[in-house]
Amino acid sequence: MRYLTAGESHGPKLTTIIEGLPAGMPLTEQDINNELARRQKGYGRGRRMQIEKDQAVISSGVRHGYTLGSPVTLTVENKDWKHWTKIMGIEPISHDEEEEIKRKIQRPRPGHADLVGGMKYGHRDLRNVLERSSARETTVRVAAGAVAKQLLKHLGVEVASHVVKIGGVQAAQTYRASIREIQQRSEASEVRCLDSEAELKMMAAIDDAKKNGDSIGGIVEVIVDGMPSGVGSYVHFDRKLDAKLARAIVSINAFKGVEFGLGFEMADKPGSEVHDEITWSEEQGYTRKTNRLGGFEGGMSTGMPIIVRGVMKPIPTLYKPLQSVDIETKEPFTASIERSDSCAVPAAAVVAEAAVSWELACAIVDQFSSDRFDALEKAIEEHRSYTKEY
Ligand SMILES: Cc1cc2nc3c(=O)[nH]c(=O)nc-3n(C[C@H](O)[C@H](O)[C@H](O)COP(=O)(O)O)c2cc1C
Ligand SMILES: C=C(O[C@@H]1CC(C(=O)O)=C[C@@H](OP(=O)(O)O)[C@H]1O)C(=O)O
Image (cartoon, rainbow, N blue to C red; front, side, top):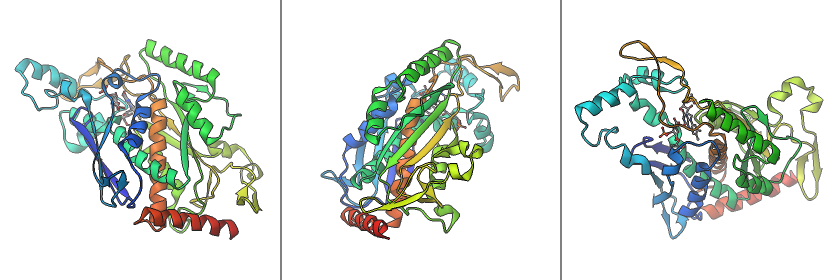
């Protein structure tokens, strides 16, 4: 499977085309809209999220609630578009307005793609860069991820996420919830955190950052239950499924690192406290006594829950702006900011879930019979009995 996304942050709409989905899979706009609504929530978001009400329109590839096997096109309207028609070059602008608009776009923001993107493509108008580098694009990544999530759900694979750290406030790690509980409790939390004491401290940290004109980042965790074992492969570097997940996580705007299971803690532990002992039982087949490796051995899923975390840097646009250089005058300046998120870690957890869901669904579709969804379901069922008895 593959998908493309298109669209600018303040353009009329965002689009994704998904190719390679099996035919006969149930899919509705509501399945996608639930995920889009989840991405819009979260304490610390800026004013843009009060304007948008993300809703997907399916305009190809689905009839009577089932996929056809042909490309699925999804679009999401930018409600803010109507305020940006002059800036986006659709409506003519007066001389005075031109001056104002130009002044803003000569000034690259530190931590954004503006300066390097402008150099790379030869844009003197840095809006040409920021319109596409903006995380607004994650809307349609979540839409594509929602389709992948449906595919996984029908095959008995469930995905959830929660926030484990914001601005230095760590959620209690002693607690390991069931996937259902993670879904319910993270949904009920303003910051998608399972630890209610830490939740309050995270919200206070976001308030503080906002008050100081600053921003904060954090860590999100995605957990996957029910993934069949042996998906991915050790035989070639670009077939390793953990590597594909790592790329997917780091491709999310502002994500700078990724870890599986115990993650970077492994550096401090002996092998006996890292590797998971193997057992077999009639009911479960092969399993592991622990899951410190987070569901992967040799680039393949082990059948244990997948546990992957990603770290998000603080939002780069600050109300207390950092110094930069005007690309026309080469003079230093500190920019004035109109609006921005102070913390988007809770929203980014939903994006990370979508990114993980997409990679897992792709890997399954690549590995098993997948033109017809019923054949895929059967292939997965057979694979599960084979690996249990192996
Ligand atoms: C859900 C989400 C919302 C974001 N919102 C903002 C924002 O309001 N302001 C901002 O400066 N950056 C925001 N970012 C981060 C920037 O898009 C990102 O840092 C920038 O494009 C540069 O890319 P890089 O950090 O991956 O290098 C957001 C990221 C995500 C995932
Ligand atoms: C629009 C979204 O996030 C945006 C991501 C973003 C950025 O620079 O990445 C900057 C802000 O956009 P604006 O400049 O229009 O206020 C966020 O609101 C979204 O998540 O849907």
